[in-house]
Length: 155
Image (cartoon, rainbow, N blue to C red; front, side, top):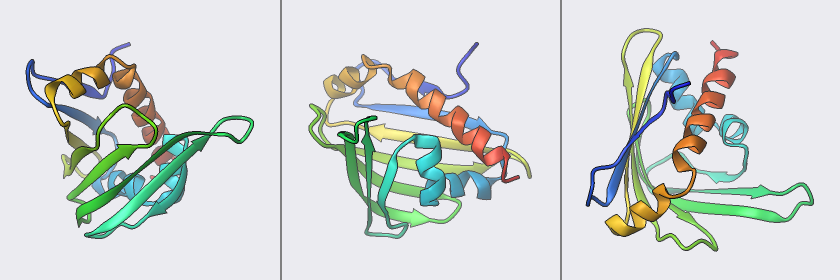
């Protein structure tokens, strides 16, 4: 089955672009990225902080079955325009990756469909390529599939 979330990376560039069309109205797609309870469900993580405002911040944490913290990430929200865009940094703790800059753009296609376009900028093309060696594309596609399924129940 072909992935619905597309990840494209131009050779030698330090960015990648992630796009996905959802069978969701724009407001529901945006809500999936901004409501802590919903984010926790589709991302499979604990939302410690999510300040949806310009100059806000966020923090996520995932633990294993024994309660040991397995993943921590945080960042700053640089711009926030409801139903249009979120510009934020993303930094994983205890990982060999530098902070990245993410531009999330939300677009209504029809009354019932919307599109997410994420431009992710890394420190260098080498850092971006290092990320792409991980099962990154499969992971974001699975997460977006969960987002679609969860938000279908709110339609």
